[in-house]
Image (cartoon, rainbow, N blue to C red; front, top):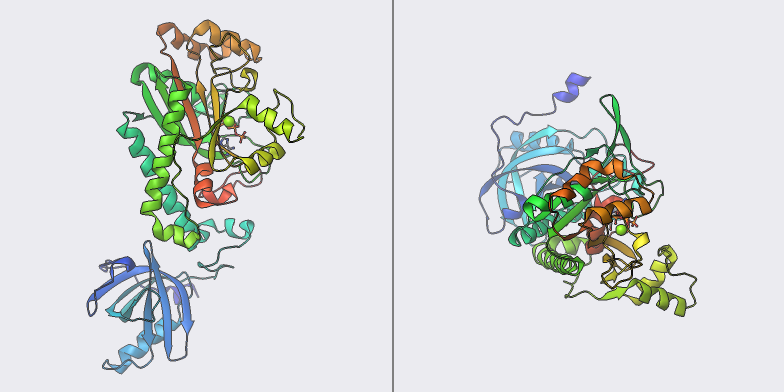
Length: 450
Ligand code: ATP
Ligand code: MG
């Protein structure tokens, strides 16, 4: 049985792709070798239309039972072979390009030979063209789900966002760093950590590169890291993952206002770049973002509390904004905006308090898009005694942070920075409603596979 099905398949051998599907315009009459997978099959009895998709797009291949001017036996064999195809099979086709007004992309390919490199054994419960399929159905076969044109567009936009962000930071003199993801103590306190076995000891997966990136400003002044953060988030929301990608920036000799400036310019630049670069992708998504102009509006935390109270919504100074508060704010505040100057006790221990004599407020910000937080940042404390004081006030033990605190004995410069969630940024750019679709293989409280 196994042997019989294997014999239907061909080896790649010395065949190599000559062109991608996107390169066929103006190539009338030329012979090409294409490779990819079968996106769809339309069977009209004597004629079979196969859409071959590759990483750049797709093209129609027309198999005819009786092709003119060709030897009957070859045509018949090729046609029979094509009839065995199932969607998603991996194929290679040698054939002649021909322009065809009615074909989906204005060209089609008339095949001379085909290799079936891998014949699909089963057909997934959705097509590559479908948009709204329940997530759980798709996630079980995520690798195939990612072939859907919608998600391919999302991930090409993600790639280009990252590219624009890296080049933006590079041009401004930041260097990319990598910090340990296996750590001995919580970097921030608060957020729940994943414990792991580290040889004979307990360790944790890093919830943030915070303390390491601060330390790195000592030698490099301007650093960034794009890497996973791990959060044992027990809640089921459309905006939390247990493993997310954070774009972390830290900058010496500046304060929170300076890094807010960098953050808004970076986002505006990255969106401008993808709008320009990913036109096809946005047309598949059916929505294109507008490059946001800078500066983004800034609202003080206290100001927003007053606004909410003015609307008759129950909230007190010192409360965090809950989902219903953020909903109410997003009905008034559109696009990207900052919430600045949060109460110090609501922010992590390393956050500097405001220089206005009061220690109640901190030099801190969240960047929001509607009701979604996409970044948090602040001026950091660079004095050791102050940092130890704040650790204690937040119920943390300075001894647990000895390896971090020692760095502050060696002239830690003033510094500021932020962490920006890549998946959340991608949601705002693409209009995705569930963060799980902004990552290749989501990890959450229910899902550890695939
Ligand atoms: P939230 O209040 O939304 O849970 P947070 O304030 O705990 O987020 P921070 O510690 O400020 O998150 O992390 C900085 C950024 O990293 C966030 O603004 C967000 O974009 C991203 N981020 C944090 N936690 C997650 C998560 N569990 N899933 C996806 N992104 C996250
Ligand atoms: Mg935050």
